[in-house]
Every structure is written in C-alpha cells, then in structure tokens.
Image (cartoon, rainbow, N blue to C red; front, side, top):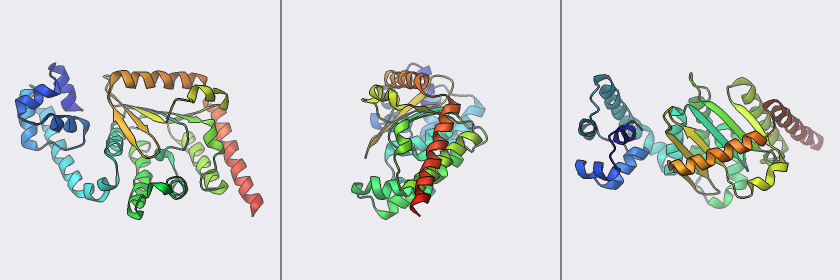
Length: 282
C-alpha cells in the first residue's frame, strides 16, 4: 500500500515503474496487491526512484519488507497452499483496516463463525467442493484466529455488519449449532465496537442481484478494497468505481435495515428459538 501511494503521488503508472526497474508489469502488480514480497535490495532501488527518502519511513519500510519475507517463509508453506490469493489478501487487509463494512446474504461470515458452525459449512454446504481434510482444517483454524487479529486487537476497526434476515432461520449444522452461533454473534455485538444490523425480509427484492461483499478502508486517504465471495470463488478489487458502487449499496441497505437494538433482539430471539427447538427434540 505504501508503494502504491508513493507511485501515485509521483503520477507514475505501474508500466512506468516496470520499465524503469526492468521488471515485468505482473511483478509490479503483484507487489502492490500484496501477492508477493519485495526484496530489500529491490525496495531500496524503488524507494530511491520514488523519492521516498525520509530516514524513519525508509527504515520502517525496509523492516517491514524483512519481516514480511520471514513470515512468508515460516507461515506460507503451512497456510498459503490452502488459500486463494484473494483470501490471503483479505486476511492482510483485515489486520490493517480502519473501517470494515460487510454485507452477508447467505451465511454468517468467516470472521464471526464459531468452530462448530464453520465445520458444518464445510461438511454440509461445501461438501461438493472436494476440499482435502488438511485444507478444511487449515481454513477452520485460520477463521478462528481472524477475530483475535481484527476485532480483539488494541485498535480494532470500525466494523459495520449487515446480515440478511433469512440467515437467522437457516439452521446450518442443526438447531443447536445455529443457536450457539447466533448467541455468539449477539454476544460479539455486545462486547465489541461492532455494529450489527438486520436487513428485513421485506427488503429482499432489492437484494436479488447482490452477493455477499466486504469493503475495507485501509487508511483515511480513500485507499479501499472490495472483497466478494461466491460459492467456490472470491476476488479482490481496488477499482474506485466498483468500490464506490458497493459502498452506495451498503449505505442504502444500512438505511433500510432494523436498528442496532431491534437487530440484537431479532438475533437473540432467533437463537433462543433454535435452542428451544433442539431441546424439544431431546
């Protein structure tokens, strides 16, 4: 992100950077997207070309480059082979975001899932995706770690979460698992700075062409990313027009949703109903 900002401040294109540094255009694009690390020697040359010469900033960026390469060597082999490129970028952006807006149409999103709920998704919803047991365990483990690095960090982002009401009645994993998941969601809304609101079923016609999405604001300078997830695919976009359009959709949905208090009551009520159903079967 720092390199992209420095390039844009100089009014340079990615192609111009590639030509000057004698790199491929794809290398520049992958570095700016966070798909690959940049070596310390390459970084020094690039910073010099971009006129980034503040000693403190240069030192910080060099330290970050060394740390990133170390983390990729130690953690990459264990996790990256089981994740899509877009998912890897999402995890990085989540830890750096100052604000997150998320709309979920079908499921409780991974950041807020309980282990039992996550397992039920892989076992019952994504069973036809033919994921290996190792990949499933890795993805579940990462999901459970994400909350600590995002919501439980000392400086958590502002988190606005919209959930379609239909999700509350969809018993993924059965009434008990779903009931516990909804209680965990309700509790998270009480204990964190996260704001949760429900989009009522009456608004369903406006959602016909929408899928779930997340907008991550990475700083206060309009640097944002859009993450979209479908059944077996996902993608990241930095296109300002696309991000802006989804932000407008989010704001429209937020305005038509239940209040935070009404949403909390609706979530807790659905949770109690699920657990009562499970108890009646016992």
